[in-house]
Image (tube, rainbow, N blue to C red; front, side, top):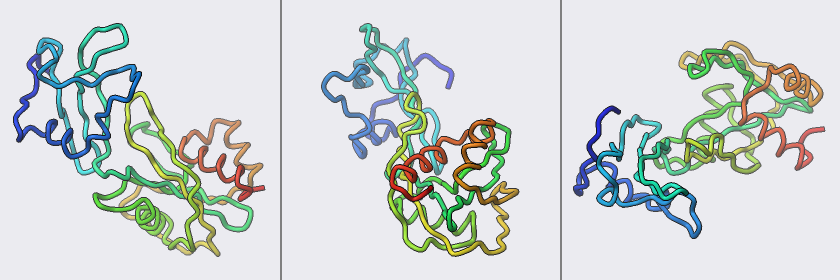
Length: 220
């Protein structure tokens, strides 16, 4: 990401192509505090601008923007490769929520959380939810109830994750070879509160889904 020159702006440039293909990600609504500018209008010495990294899941861009104080420079964002972002699913058995104990590379720690994942290109959030539940719990959802949407880091990421709840009859033995999942647990509402109070429940997807489920009367 080092360098001082602006990114190319030809038709083949990945940043310009991204701006054409997904204009909503580059919209400037009235009163926007950070105005995204054409690369050609941004000072090269404040660069680089454009796509700085991409993989099958995310694209890291450095947009040329005008800041609230009038200065112009670069501002980094993470964009999901799939337009639908992803899905997270709150599994419920009886009056208990099923959580998985997942080791996450980003924090280098284990977390109690609900199944979730990025959407594949062209995949709907419902399809993502179904796939993730099968991959992480080994069971297919028996209907999905949409709870809402969460933006987990509005200072960095443009990704919006759709939250769902599903009722399961039971859990079956399941081995996840491609996920760092070490444990599955079933928790009552009071036990979830205890995990939260003790700092054992810190996953924002899980907390948002539980909050929605309580609002809708899906949990005691």
